[in-house]
Image 1 (cartoon, rainbow, N blue to C red):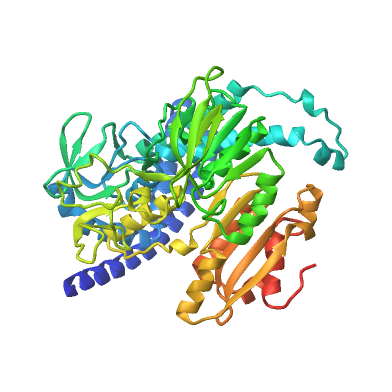
Image 2 (image 1 turned 180 degrees about the horizontal axis):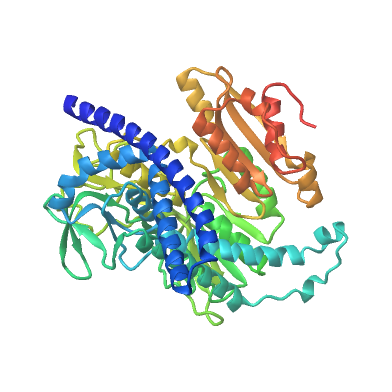
Length: 579
């Protein structure tokens, strides 16, 4: 440690002297070049064509030399210092292993980890498993937003009352859509984003391997499933993602009974579709289906619809997203048996039982059934058992620094040089959370201790209107405040008082800010309303930075914008009024 400190100090002092010297040298060089070109222009008028060509060549060489010298001189000292330290720390690893870091999985989490690893000059390999982009890009976030965007336009153009209030007259019956065209839009968007992701990896020098990687019983080893070749890496990051969870008794054929994977292909628009589960995925697809003309029935096992949402937001969402649309629901029931049908010929049969008594309560016959009951880790056949890693329902236990543990119990031990990020560790099953965890894992790999603050990671449901949140629900915040001994404050902004929302004819919605009354720090924010998914980022940043409502209340928000809904809530928290 003492030797390392002395080396670092000496290196920094030397570079400071070199940088000052380089700066002076560059200034002098630029001055000399300027004089050269002035004299050269005069000389060109007198010299032969051959000599003029020679001077042109000399100009090019001198310009290139000066540019390189200037760029070198003004490279930030800290960057030079970091690169030097990195070279010291990684020189041994590079010769001993095939890669510095190997990442198993290439979804948003694996991709984010790979980009950051390359930014740290780590020799990086990604075992893509033929699935660059993972669930988010190929079967989740990206294509679903394409469906929501297209179907949302259809809903808007068919809303005669809304458009009439803006002075626009339309014949709703005349609005048509091309189902295949909408499906192609989703598919082409996924393909484009997938190509961009793969291109970014190769451009940065990542080694993208087609096979799925799996561990062996030996530390640092990964087997490429495509070739059977064994590679070695100093550090390994597991990022296998997740797959749809299908409860027992539900027979999925991905035609009439399907998960989100099949729904995204939009092979047809059923007249009546049952959706098992009323979380993010189910709500978004109910938005798509009803916009395109379907009727929807939710089947929810818990006593309330939208059980994971803040209760106040869920009640408003029920009015805006369910009651005003051709949607009904059953709660406290299980879809105990679901039998596929034949499109246009035979219905899908759904038998439901009471969640408590397990007695049969109803049988539905619908045109299609979507299973939206959550996701489970895609951790099978990864060699976890060989490395002594015990999973809990497929989830890999990790520390706050994403280090893999042998088990989730108190006796779980850290497995050196192995990390797990994203859906597979179960901490927060969101694409951007996986990316943040991947970056965090790399930070810990290079020796800069880092922990992701999951309370500051926002989430959004892209219905019309949108729902977004960061931090715990109000119910959980109340429990936390009581347990930790502080008082919870609450303030609200309203879309109906916002000029921009009213101009759009979209005055429905609220923004709720929860904060610690003692410190003023923002604990959580929940929004339902126009562009809630964009508004939540300011709030997530406030939670991450520990910003207080007092500070936020004095920050200026652009007028007239939707951000003033948040301004109203922040000001209300400190007794101020927003115009």
